[in-house]
Amino acid sequence: MILAGRVTVDGQPAAIGQKVTPDRQRITVDGKPIGGKGLPKKKLYYIALHKPRGVTVTMDDPHAAHPVADLVTDIPARVYPVGRLDKESEGLLLMTNDGAFAQAVAHPSAQKEKSYRVSVRFRNNERMNTITDVLLSRLETGIDIDGKETLPCTVHLLESFPDRHILEFKLKEGRNRQIRKMCAAVGLDVLRLKRTSIGCVRLGNLAPGKWRHLTKEEVQSLLSNI
Image (cartoon, rainbow, N blue to C red; front, side):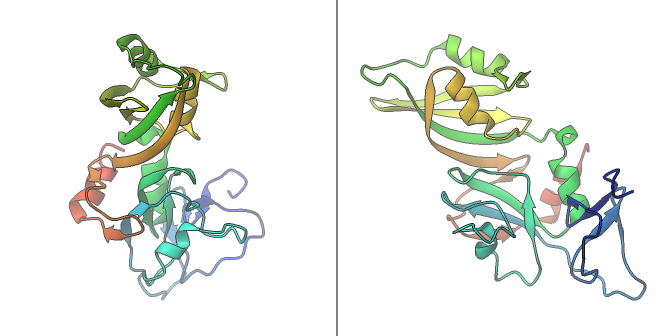
């Protein structure tokens, strides 16, 4: 069952010989939680965090200078990230200690729409360049990344300045560094990238490094249609 990937610990695939602490970690088989008889009921946390730039989305890497775990030490449980957000990006990151929730929301089949505010400039920045409808259409219809085309998405031009342009991306997939690779494919360098929403959950005015609890309605919405 472990080799088949049916067992998870805190939302991650279990490994043969892995040691766990049942009263502190969530173990599931085929998405259903299991535990020893008489174990106290675990309090579940669902967190929206504003991850700052320079913070690594990792919980256990001893070499990470600024791990995301340092931002949630005031939560009386071990919560872990749902999905990814690269070190140089910022914005909304969901965290939880509910393995079944994490697995359901992060699974590619969930296809929850995520919004990003992206500051870009053309690589050849010696003259003023224009974001054209043709360029936006190319981003929207699909870009080949590592031999696989991205899913259709929505890209809008929000603002233009002499030295940069502000785009809004709305995606239903989350491949590794996807927006950066998409922009690179059309000659754009990403200067800044901020995730502003995941499904119904909005970053809003949450300050960098701060977190809040998700509402019951937000949790239910994230799990809907999965």
